[in-house]
Length: 295
Ligand code: SF4
Image: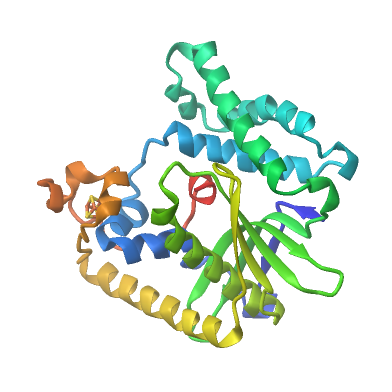
């Protein structure tokens, strides 16, 4: 098993400098609302993470560490023991995240870490990690489609059966209602399925979403014609992004998802004014953050 692995197109297909690429989070932002895409990918306005988002990042980190342990150590108690050190590591890396806990209130931190422990308990109710040997966790994947569109992302977990079937697993820890996130989550999974299919020449057998807040999971089997159609969708999204990038015309698209948007104060749909368009960013308007990956 490899942890924090990277899988890319062969070197002969890879250009030297890092090139603009589409990530599932940014593609789905643009689909939801082009202006939201602009705020995140072009203006790169920092968004304050919520405690729920950070908890997701923490749980993802613990699950990754858990699978790096020998099978016999992948038990609930050990997972709980990993929580504090994982938070220390994350908050050392990003000290601004500790601002969510004013005055370092130990009781608030304890309660929050405890709530992450509940998600881990739910995870253990869904599968036994001691019976699994993932091929990779937090796998960085990147490929280029025939059209030249580059796709980049991080897969939470890739399992490969002895018979060669690939399963793509994504942990969902978000606080938003499931019905709101489900289409977005499936979009993300199909994105990874396309990338892995193009990298390995095998259509993943199963895309599995594990909802750690309620212990439910959703499994889906894609087929090749569907992934071909999805590739065309991704290509169309990228072309639309490039068109908007050239002109700066990123339109707001009001929806019920606006309730989760950090940018209402600068959005014309809510009486705000966007900052002056800074121009198309180079070299990369498609980066995902750790928070995106833990969504
Ligand atoms: S508030 Fe809604 S319409 Fe405005 S930028 Fe955010 S998602 Fe788009």
